[in-house]
Length: 124
Image 1 (tube, rainbow, N blue to C red):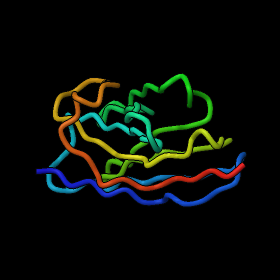
Image 2: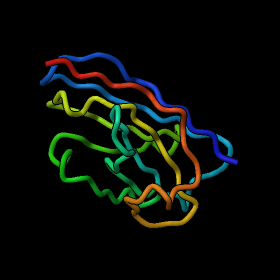
Image 3: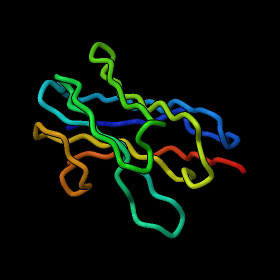
Image 4: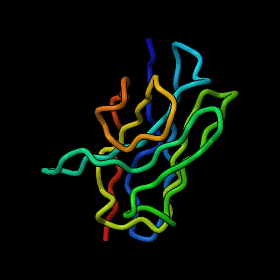
């Protein structure tokens, strides 16, 4: 079983930055893929970014490309999402997810484990 816990959310002004963390525990992750998703009020959960645990390959949603960076620290079993140039439309609850299978994935149904989420609010 895998446990994921996000942290780092909060309130920030437009143009500011936040770094989200996702601490993973419960098993080794040499073949896992990790992802970040978000869900804004009244909207469906959407893909943000994904990274393969071993090779560090990444893929981003067009809406965050060039502003957000996903990374991982294998020794700490932690995945990060560095968010720069934040916009009010980035306001959402951000979820960390883990996938048993290897390979980048941007569909939520391909992920097996989810964290409880951390709220990010960007004021204009």
